[in-house]
Image (cartoon, rainbow, N blue to C red; front, side, top):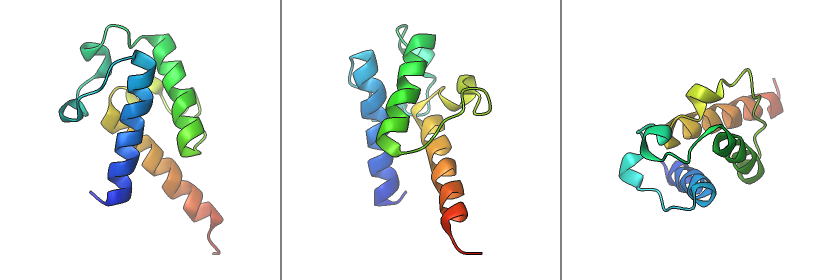
Length: 95
């Protein structure tokens, strides 16, 4: 994992942790957040979407990005943001 990916992963963990009001354990990044934290409900997911959009500069589609899957874990959120950044860079490049 590159340094920038680690920074992004840490940032995502901090965003979700702030919403849940608990520090998140990096060793549990692959675990389902809803299984770890009962307060990670549909409202917390929406708040997480807003936080991720603000801090990472991506636009998340509430339907197309299937929040049940893409916001299930820190790792799945990271993968979504990486895909969004990659797609944006392709669109911004000269063909």
